[in-house]
Image: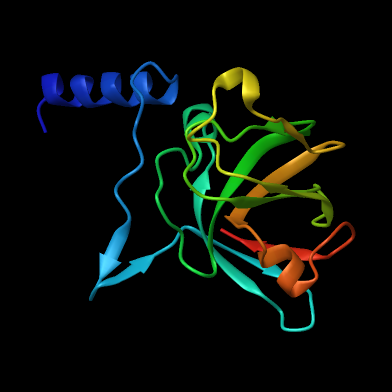
Length: 162
């Protein structure tokens, strides 16, 4: 590699490192018509429920969440990841799916669960806010009713694999 190319590569790497040039996540990986998910969340309930998840680990991804998504598979969800535990609130702006919002502490225990109805037909001022009720490191959104079906609630232990 000549000197000019080397300097160019270093410059690009520096811009990416300092966040000046963002790198977008790639499209989901699909092998033999099987989609590979970025994370798994396992709840320690009677059946050791496992949810396959896409990650929302940047501010942009967390803001978008499941907006405009028309359906989720039976044990599929979106895992929101925070760098530091914090109090968070969610709303259902632009969502088509009724969801359970599961707030998970840094200690990997469910802190709170809310059943949230789709917000696609509501004006912003009609939308409800769903609060974590304390600092959380993760939030999982899944199809509404899954938490009740499997007995997931405050104090349920969780394992997260990313």
